[in-house]
Amino acid sequence: MSFDDRDTMPTDIRGYHRRTKHAPNRYAMGPGFLDWTSQPSPFRLFEGVRQTPLPIIDETPAFPGPAPQPSALDLRALGLFLELSFGISAWKSYEGSTWALRNNPSSGNLHPTESYVLLDAVEGLGGSAALYHYAPLLHALEERATYSAPRVLPKGGFLLALSSIPWREAWKYGERAFRYCQLDAGHAIGAVAQAAAALGWRAQALADPSDGEIAALIGLDRDDAWHKREPEHPDLLMWIATEPGPATPLDLFALIDAPREFRGQANRLSEDHDGWPIIDLAGQFCRKPRQPKPPAPTRAQWPAPSFEGVSIGTAVRKRRSAQKMDGTTSISREAFAALIASTLPSESTLLSAFPWGAAITLILFVHRVDGLEPGLYALQRDSDVATRLRDAARKDFEWALVELEGLPLYRLYAGSVEKEATKLACLQPISGKGCFSVAMIAEFDRALAADGAFAYRRLHFEAGLIGQALYLWATAAGIAGTGIGCFFDDTVHELLGLTPGDMQFQDVYHFTVGGPVEDTRILTLPPYPDDRRERR
Image (cartoon, rainbow, N blue to C red; front, side, top):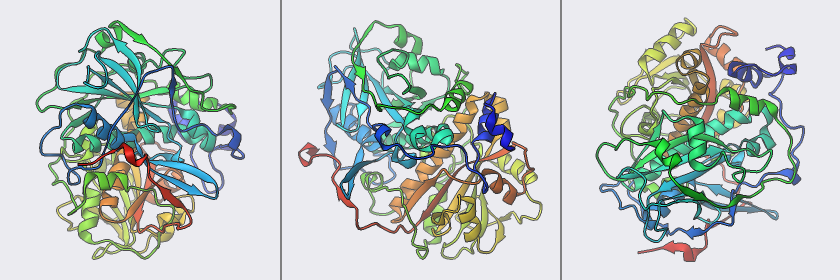
């Protein structure tokens, strides 16, 4: 990419992706400094609405689930589901500053993702079907709109919608923030799927609704939904099945057109804002039209990896983004196999919530795995995609199948790759000091040709979802993970031997797993008042 490319606005999503690449000699454009007076609030609240506090339930089934029997859809179940999906996991305090951590991870802990649920009447919540906004700060549902009837949904489930407020990310990360919003949405899909499993429910992202339909359904097309320069954009819609059996067809247009009364005004997140018009452009490029439901993706029946004695609540609530790795911790071959198996498309993992076929191959930098020599490896998540990547990559790679629980793991070359992993992740030592790190290589051009520019978001959803699986299984294994959004895009492609300037394959996300170094100076406080907890 030439410096001239940074002086003109892109005309399509490929242009946005090229312009926002990091390189060793220049980074994508961001703010010159962090204006703390304009830092956006990480909490959306609506003024003038009825709020219903939700119970907090400690007890959960064994990780990864699912629970042996589906829970009834009541206030207790909703409280556990939303807390495990989006609730606060802890408060941190250091030198007079206090901040919240959440069960769904976010780039820079900035949390652009918001969530809404559309429910039929639930005892203790309301006598009518209604649209609610989930407020993590309060662990409460805010009644955003009410229908005139008690039931408007098909039997056996409810709808959950995800949206993003890009300003929260742009405040810190500038032009690359649009990428991070999509990755966060992918993490949220995984958080929802894991929370659903804790209740014996099943989560499924819906591939067909358009952005306009989702916006109309949850009121994002209204003036009271957000303030000027803080737009909130729809990400996707999910069906949460609370009963077994095939889902009844959903008439989304009937839900949008049905009589209902909106109330409330969204809070303002910042007093001042810096404009990032390229992010608005990227959103326009990727605006999703209504699309036909894609064919069911092919999923191998990999066994569900698990860890003895770990509950879902423990894995979700104890998950943290490591800030530093110790450079000495190693993991067993069995734990490593469980972690990478969790990222494979299968009906028994978080990936079952994803309605699109796999388009990402994992390139693994293995540093400290007992019984596995350090080196560069590839995990085949789709055989056709991996074959095309192999054809496009360096010809001197081994592609030697590794004997590891029958997993499709291939060694590309052996030898220490700590320096390479560190260099490629914007010189961050955390990528080389863990047990292993990952570069997620998406089949870029083919996805955009098939699904249009929306595929850019879909690829990042998939990458974030993979990251969420790694987060949870790393926590269950007693170690930690961290998503890495800063990497030298084209330098990764160069390592793999991909043709310079070609966009057949593109790096979209990095992740690292290892032994975390805890900062003992930071005080950890409970997420919610103790009297909110329901104990048996």
